[in-house]
Image (tube, rainbow, N blue to C red):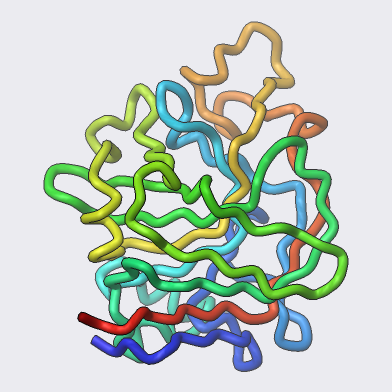
Length: 232
């Protein structure tokens, strides 16, 4: 596996990075910048008793098995996979050059790492290190330390226990083999429809959330870099 830095500038297309919040995986790109705008869709897969709801701003699959022909046709070759980058991200530094204007409503922009471990698929958000959205361009760096106190395992909603579960962040970071996602978390979910138990139902299928309680605005990603620590 290649452990030289992974650098995505978006100057030659999405490079395998996908959008989710707008109903299409094709991101908005302008002058080599990945742009994501609210209102974003709500991901309910980890609703309580799981770790909470998400807005998915941008994601990239990290193993070939996850990438479909349709996805490649829409967002181009996945450069992380094509370059054979190492999925062992223990103590890797992820730097995002970004700017934006967001009313976050209490949410944070955080990294989500998703991996398959024996018996389940597990999702972790790095709550101990967050990205700060500023009106001017800035480089924001987090280090993927294998320290459980800096991560939150999202677990699963009540009816997806056969898909998602809990694991060990130390093992997850050794092989992040599903994807990396930039997300807003946590979100406050209120239904526009009265009498809905939001945690038992599914957003955008059984009810629509009241967006006055959810983040709004836009975020622009200019460059995403992954730097691996020295081995040994």
